[in-house]
Length: 148
Image (spheres, rainbow, N blue to C red):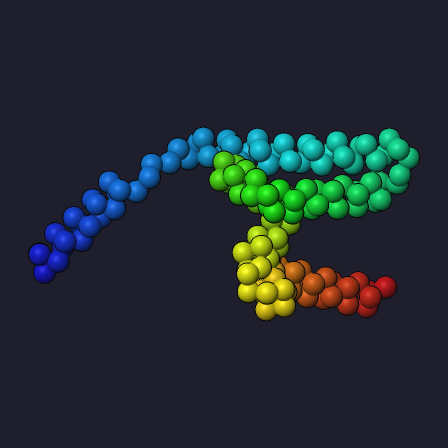
């Protein structure tokens, strides 16, 4: 029994020695300002379309479409992975992170073909989010319909 404990202790010491050291404060700071920067870019896009005379809903829609477009483009060129490595959760939380989660599996499984690769695996990561949000919106819609 004692020998087993020593092996576990040695193993734990080896794991701690070999594991990369992370600076939690720096990671949180990078996630905070990079996620905030993506949101500030979104605000600039929205304000640009508001200044062109579009209504707020249309300006927000344009902002979402543009951010998704650039998230997919940056994923396609491999830039978003580098941003994600630096920014951590700051790049995942905004809408660009959702675009990345749809585009990355599609690119990864492209070699398996467009039907069984891209089509079948595109929503591998984001599929549950889409399913549950659609289901939740249907349930809320039913409640809203019967509450009128």
